[in-house]
Image (cartoon, rainbow, N blue to C red):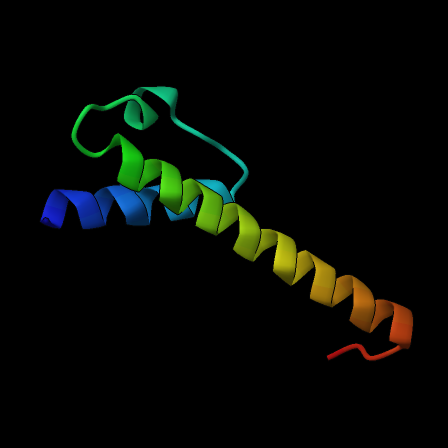
Length: 62
């Protein structure tokens, strides 16, 4: 279980940074957890960029 959580966390970090480790993604035991983390990290990064752009367009520099 700890390996799966670590793989997810690492994947989320990589996804937020716009990277993907194919070797970890293909790992037979923790690959699916890593891949889900990558997707979650990518979505979170996209949402943050989207919110920042909307705020910029609306003139809200929070």
